[in-house]
Amino acid sequence: MPKLTIDGKEIEVEAGTNLIEAARRLGIEVPHYCYHPGLSIAGQCRLCMVDIEKTPRPTIACNTQAADGMVVHTDTERVKASRQSMMEFHLVNHPLDCPVCDQAGECWLQIYYMKHGLYDPRMTDEKVHKPKAVPLGPHVMLDAERCILCSRCVRFCDEITGTGELGIFHRGDHSEIGLFPGRDLVNNYAANVVTSAPWARSPTATSGSRCACGTSTPRSRSARAVRAAATSTSTSAAGARTTPRAAAWPGSSPASTPRSTRGGSATSVATTSTPWTRPRA
Image 1 (spheres, rainbow, N blue to C red):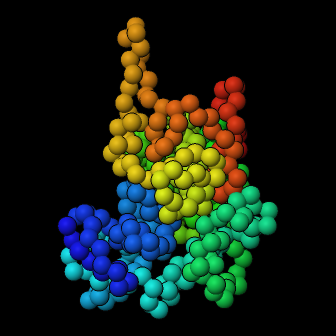
Image 2: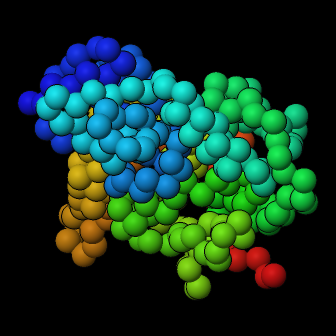
Image 3: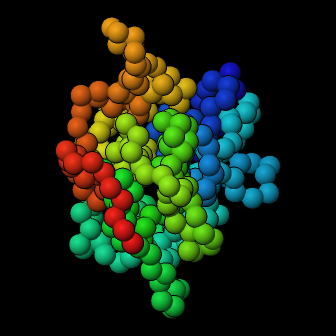
């Protein structure tokens, strides 16, 4: 088991543990948006930068595994400057609608800005505007302007449900979450993409935490265990049909009903008895 030092505190962790999880065990918060312990590593938000001795530049903690003798610093001036720059990058086109946003006050974009941002804005051009209230399926609406493209929802559909409806389309600051042609977000666990968004719940929440839409999302289960639960089947008495067990996301209740979220880029809406039909453009 590798033994390393983080901010002057020594800790021994299991092989394969990344620096975010190692720091968390010491009570040290490494900010992040795209990382989730139940999903693959994307390294997309670049907010979890840390300094490692004998390395020339800050390194992302999510994709760096603990090594024996490693000395990590999470609060150096270079790390603070990196985080501040990344917060400015993430929010450069973010709409200034916090006063009317239902997530205001519980938003981790706001919280991390106050902790790691507080920069003087340099943006003088018009912000890039994106579609508002885009229906992805019968239960989820997307506000593309509020999305920071952490790709958690995309990875959830690729790795947990295995249905792969979502992707990131276009380039640069015009990139946005969308559906592949001819697809709708109608899998049995579609509303869980809302709970996976980093602004809907604390990115560093502990087991049993509850996100804005009320879905319990403990982080103790691995992606493999979650995937196994999602793909396990139960055969009917007649043996004519198999149906997936209703427990895809960690901590989701088989009997739970999707509830309305309180904000964020994706919004779960109440289930209706009418069949889903994609609205015409």
